[in-house]
Image (cartoon, rainbow, N blue to C red; front, side):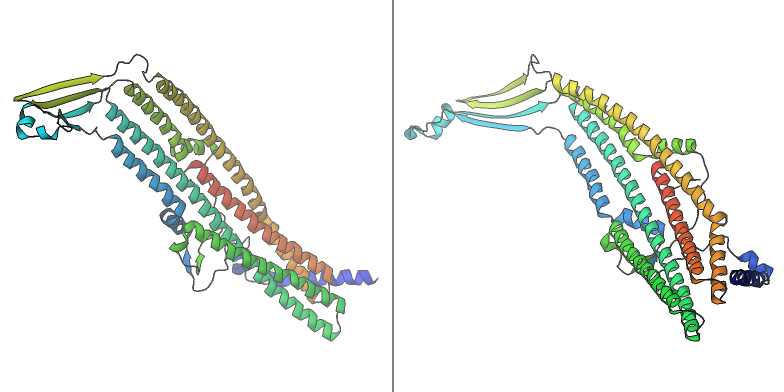
Length: 442
């Protein structure tokens, strides 16, 4: 009989709550969102805020790892200058038949009639267009380095975007934890009032206060995650590029993506800088092979000399060239040929890796999209409504404390789960952008 009365009281309270909700204006009901405002962020008032695009630009300009990588391009450009240099001419000079051990004979007449003096210039004439091949090989290597640095920029962009989303998740979680703490504090205050009035026992009041600890712990954990996230993001942006007192400004909301996997894969084959580097690596390997074949051509050294001996002045011309009998650079030519095969295989692997990355990212995004869709389809509203009914019933004495706490835990888990699912979806979107090699997706 007592259980039946309690059950009737619960139903009466529920109907009263539903009826009260039904008296709201139709316009207010139409404006209520289907899901919680997960984009609400616990931003620090007065702090300098940056958007995701601004964060990426700051990282591309100030990230120290990228700045160090870009110096490799400059180093290779300096190597191009070296590769294009011509050999220096060699100045020659000698004096012969000087009376070093007979100093008494050392006179102007002796130097003019008996000593010999030679002055000359020699120059190395490169054959096989070695200088042109050296320059082309150096330029091709610079092109590979540029693509590799662009790939580093792609990786840094993904790292910044991922960390940015983590900060947004931390701030949204902090906002949720603070709201839950404030709401539950109100429940604790009501519980204390009911305890003083004798409507509830001390055990229920203690349970409420113990549950309060969980909310306070959630707030502290979310605050720590936010601080650490901002610190890690600052390191990616370039530690000196922004002050410690800054915050992120983002929507942290669902962004639908159109397009199919085949279109993304085709776009990735055109945009991925690591694949471009692999393709340019084949070109660079061919340039090295041509250079080694040019090195096999033996150079000619030419020399012209002026000689003065006695009263005779004459000019002599010399030339020399190696005979390519044993060393024809055949080892390096063979090695460079195998290097071409190596780079070709690396290009094929890179192409397959691009296709795999896009497929994995696309499937991950689609899976996370389904999970977010489940939350947005009504589960969040149901969890929130269940909590509101249980809270209303508990405050009016028609529901037990355990029922209310269970509804509260279910709602909190649903709200937190939705934010985590949304963060996973946004991270999947950034992974797809990284896999495609561009941030411009349909």
